[in-house]
Structures are given as C-alpha cells and as structure tokens.
Length: 110
Image 1 (cartoon, rainbow, N blue to C red):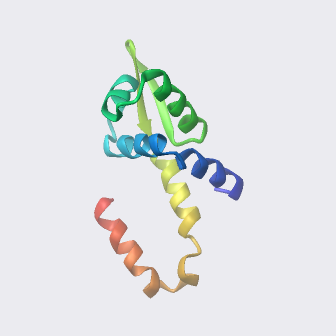
Image 2: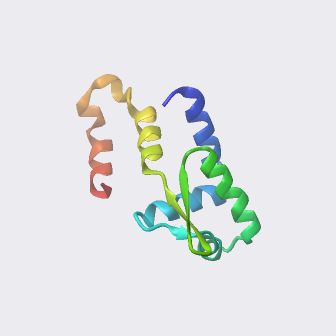
Image 3: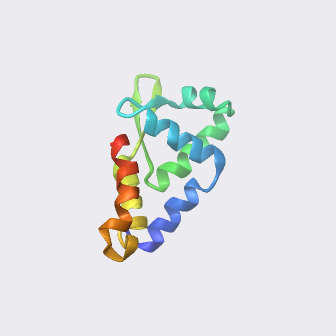
C-alpha cells in the first residue's frame, strides 16, 4: 500500500459511524451483514448508512454482494492487512524484541 492509498483508507475510518461499521463487519467475518441489519445494529438511518458504506467501499475496506433482495457487506480483510502492514512495517527499526509486544497482542485475534 502506498502513502496516498493509506491516507484514503485512514480518512474513511476517521469517522465514528464508519469505524463502528468496519469493526462490526470484521467481527461478522466470513458471513457479513445485510445493509439494513448494519443500520439497525448501529442505530443509524438506512440512507445515512448507505452513504457510509459507499465511502468504506471506495476506500477498499468493504465488499458488497447481492443476495436475493439484500446487499450483504463484508469487511475486506486484505485491505485491513495491507493497512496494518503499511503502519507497522518499519516498526522499531527492525528490532524484533521491541516489536514482540505488538505481535503478541495481535496473535490471539488471528
């Protein structure tokens, strides 16, 4: 990921509803959630949620797929992976001992 893409991705997450939406979708992997269910769970009007989901999709953080009459949204874990690597790839100037706490904290979730 280059710097300009990272700025777009971070900008998409720099808003409370979008951040909550992305975190919700990460927790729902691999099944995803219908747009209406996301709006219901986060107590956001559906038209507002649609705009937020569009921003997340343009930033490459979510995918959508039509299933019958619903649109199912899923987190793009490849996008999360790329952003995480971009942010930490130069961590601690390559000193594994300094990075160990970060890696240990990430390990249980993965």
